[in-house]
Image (cartoon, rainbow, N blue to C red; front, side, top):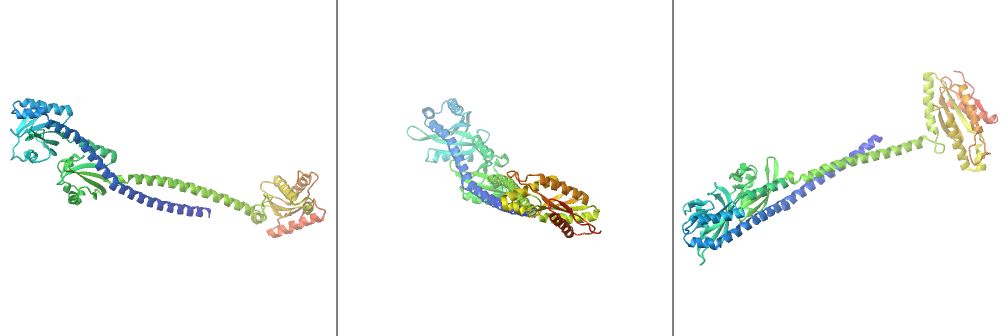
Length: 481
């Protein structure tokens, strides 16, 4: 019964805990996912954009200084007579500020001056020189352009193309500096390692321009990348939106942002599993805590039930005043003992003990004193019998003693010993003059005698002892086997 109750309680707790944990996990996971999609990924994009803008401030400023440098203007207007002077100037700018390249293209000669020397002349019919003629015709002072660097192994470079004017504000050329993509590469690698987010760039046609995975960086188009290809056209039409797509059995969360300075689209990806990893850690912790709580609760319930059950068993089997077995326990013990005695052919005796004149003690000294006499007598009897004997309070001032493997002679001897000890004791310490005696009735099991008959013979022996003057022991009349 106790085990079933504990199992039911544990099952209820486990079901409630699992239900709560699963619900909490889904709520937390959805909240984390929403936070990543609506806040964290856009914030990452904003931060990267801010870093890009910060990285472009210096090159734009230096390009502006170059375009307004009197040396540069005077050198052009003097007829470009000393190309090495221009080369030294460009090299000093590049090395001083750590740029990847520095350049100047003359409107008059169309020569491309590089920090390493004059490399070529721009040609209006060469598609790779289209940038110069575009800048030549624009109204703004500068542009930011991403192109292969023809002078340096076609390495993709971010150019600041700044228009140069003479002192009459006439266009005389384009100057500026260039940065390689290492800076942005460091940014995207940092975000990948710190936040488990993949950051990369695509152009407006979907070609990947910068990616931490070199295999993807080589001009691969997102239309050819599994998973994201399904939404590639939507991304290109709606840069700045958030998306989801499936890739390698994983849900990928994507936030996009258009970078006007580069004319690129910034892509910030994070797998849903990484985004909701905190929820997984939370549910693991919850499971551990919950299991511990269930075990502790179950143990507490088990101990409480055991305690109350033991208390109930004690109340059901023990006399509350004397602490001896009660009559119900004795009846059960007597039946079992009689069956064993018949089966093993071993002698069995019982002794009924009645405190003499107990009513007078209650009347003269009060019931509290009577209770003290009962408890004192019970303790004396209990301390004087064998450990195998069963002593019980039969009712009122009567006690009964069950003695297995005990002949009538041994039972009579034991009864006389108990009688003598009782008569010599002082049951109440505050009443030294109060003495207590008892009458004893002894009966030994005979043949197929039933427990009731055995008790009846012992009771009649007790009656005879009381009739003979009390404070004595009498044996029941034997019956034929």
